[in-house]
Length: 137
Image (cartoon, rainbow, N blue to C red; front, side):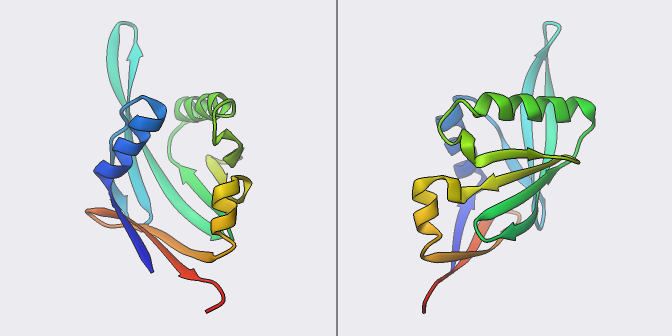
């Protein structure tokens, strides 16, 4: 089974939850491209980031991102700020530009994974595609 979300739907959800626009675009079969505007010295600059789904183990999703020390610093700061918000407990920074999403740490998501097995998260030109199968069929 699959769930398909357009990139605009994902961007709208992020803006609704975070209060900040974050355009999401196709970056490859397992990669999305994110764009974020940052104010630097009275100027606005756009920072791009590729986020790749590396591996799915149960309800844990291992992600990696590209970028140098500046991007890594910004990601770690964002994760640190997210820790104090609802859902922040799901995000764990790892070494080597990697992030772990522990979906089972969320009560609603955890109960969902009692009933389904997440198989893949992939992307095409129009959609983010979440593939899963029901358990015990």
